[in-house]
Amino acid sequence: METARWLGSAGQVSGLLTLFVRHTSCSILIQENADPDVCRDLNGFLRRLVPDAEHPSMRYLTHTLEGPDDMPAHIKAALLPVSLSIPVRDGQMALGSWQGIFLFEHRARGRRRCVSAHLSVD
Image (cartoon, rainbow, N blue to C red):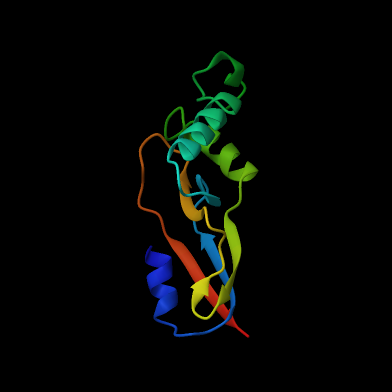
């Protein structure tokens, strides 16, 4: 919603929008926006794929300075995108009917996150 408002303030332009999340323990995704179960299921899958450092399969981790979700969050961010390129037509993102942009938090407790946006106009 915030991205669409910002983009609307640029006028009826066409080009390419780049979004970049400026953190190492979260990702930015385009995913289904109609059913919140999609993001819940994706999060559940990632928790199974990369469990917290306290899980026996993760004993090899050494970077746990900020807690048991610290290094697992970095691993998840390494597997998922931290930037997106989205076509813009007439001042609107050219997303599919069911697509939305999600800041995907990989830490147990959410943190303040910053996304940089750049619009290259045709």
